[in-house]
Figure 1: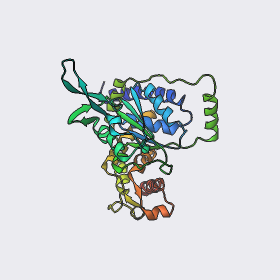
Figure 2: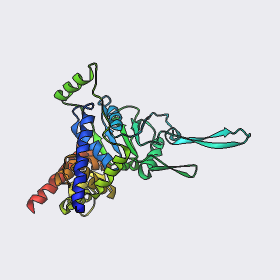
Figure 3: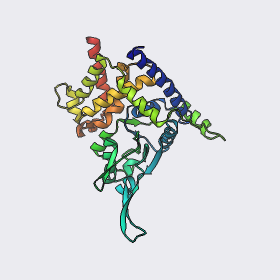
Figure 4: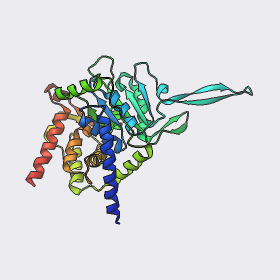
Length: 335
């Protein structure tokens, strides 16, 4: 059997397990198909996700469900204005030993886990939020000069209330860039809300079951990186990301007029990975241009900022991304 045939078999097996994981998740998190797909894609790609939506839309329940479905050890941090970095990372305490001497002992914080839920992350100060920067990028933390590795795998799923609400702080740009995806959780439509109403107000609720173990998830993340990507997909990703940078040679005039800054190379890396993950989630062996279009907004929108004039005109980041996608599609049709 050739290496390509082995890869096809492995992708087929992973797709079947992911279908089971998605079904188990959606049995409890009803009607939010795209949200579940995007969160699973972020984790398959080895990254972190930021879920944004009004309180009460099930963001916390989704993260709790995924910890069970993916077989990961999970911990939760409720972010509040008085939360300190040591409450996340841990701290050293001075212990008195039986011989009368004293020594420092490190007490691990909740960041030492495999799936960390940062609930309402924007209710803590930027100083506290920054405690996660090294953890999210390097999968380790440095405390008192000592490097301490985190769980394997390690993922952060953070929830955020809309910044217009009272008692919230905007996330620093460096913090936002650590998130592979920004996933918007909207209100459900009427039929979906009816399903939620019937499924969650009875005697029994759907219980998720484990479809993965940690070592299975690590193997799946490695497999995602081995998937082939067509040249047209690579070029489309590059075109899209580079066109979203105001003032760049590839940038159209409306981008320069609407944005103050755009995505860096990390966005292209993220888009490459999550398009592969989405392909596997949908039972395909290689990503397509449809995968790029579907994942472009979650990858790019938190890596772009509108100018004051654009906000005054009523423009949105999602609108700019949609226009860029339309331009790329028009270019392909013309070619």
